[in-house]
Amino acid sequence: MQTNQQLSWYKKATIILAITTIIPTTIVLTSQAAEPLPAQQVVTSQPISTEDAARFVANYADQAEKVKAVVKGVVIEAGQLESLNTVAAAHPNANKFRLYFGKDDNGGDVTIAVAMDGQGNDQTDTMYSSARTGTNLCPPVCDANGTIGGN
Image (tube, rainbow, N blue to C red; front, side, top):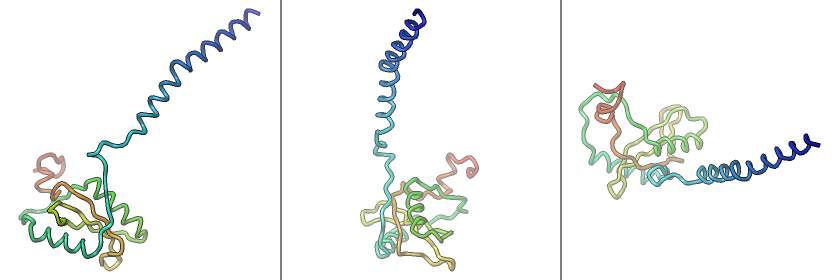
């Protein structure tokens, strides 16, 4: 009889522990995981027409600072990577891609991602653009903080 009472006590203790500790902890952790990304981390990539892409690249070329250095690399931002992934999904047979620098009609820096065919021609039926924070060229971007690209 005493064994049954002890077993009953353990069952009650387990239920109380679950109610007071495990369930509230699960609720808190679940609600934390469901929160959206902060605004500065939200990445947006959007389709762009051939006409807009050509105009944005021309805008950039007209205003770009000339680089007189060996380009060692380029920083790829999350939005650019999202654009590349979207273009790659639309062109599953492509194995090469281009990122064009552009300036939108408001003067904002953008990058245009486009797939290439086997002859190196742009596949302009599906292109995506994303905002970027600067030229992202190395130099000068990697020279300040890059481990392998710095001077």
